[in-house]
Image 1 (cartoon, rainbow, N blue to C red):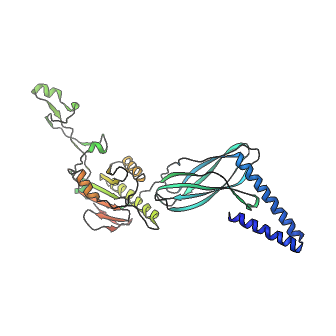
Image 2 (image 1 turned 60 degrees about the vertical axis):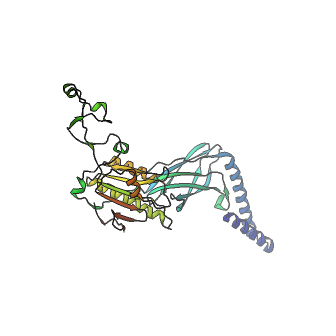
Image 3 (image 1 turned 120 degrees about the vertical axis):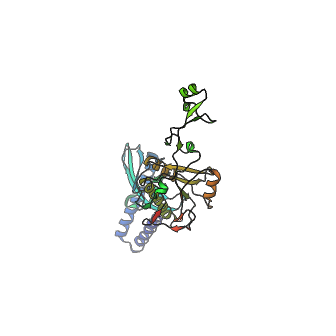
Length: 358
């Protein structure tokens, strides 16, 4: 719009100079500008009737934070190629705050479908939205800009990379006989601590546990005790409270980076743990067991899809009410305001080089 106004003003100035001073040079330049504007208008009318755009509806999720590629398909039904197309690209965080912007410039060949490749680069982690707006056609020498119909919006996820943290796991924590209520609800088919005990049948036992030979010999129904579920001595609570600061996207990116690093460091130290947060959509707690790298990846995937909430939640009380029979050795509380609480101790700002005793 601004370039259009400036071009018209410049043309009026040339017309004034031509009439006042009878300048042939100004007259020639004015005619050249008029010709470019007429060609630009004809190019715009041609593009409106001959160009069709197909925008991406979803972007591939990336496990690295640098670049996410995408493709726009431009179908030109006309014979002549069209150059001078551009579109503004915006990267928005989960709270619709602008993180960065760029301009994609491209052209369309005649009588074919042209794939236009673009990339979105981010130094931050988390869930973002890519918005493509203000599709434009530029006239020769970019004297005029004509708006074209077309825009798109889709999500992209930049996965955090785990960094080494100084996590010191005590032997009493690693081998703590923790019990987790509703283990089969957490992850069916979880490992069990082996047991060779034979006992009488109790309500709730499965038919496959029955020891048929001993039951027939003794005349009473006996079962094999499969053992107790493998517990999780460390509980990692995540306070997913919305941030309303100027640098909220970068702050939440650091929170995700530290969460992934802490969980992976516990995994490397052979310390099973649960990652727990409040699901604002279902209004309930969710917990993900982390004992393998696959479970670690699944946990981070679910975390990136979560929605932040406004009011602070008392996660400890919620967990005690929902799972009153659970036992654990250590619990940690990570907040999006970049504080880390060790059990009942006062929260402290966390850094990548801090020592975390569990």
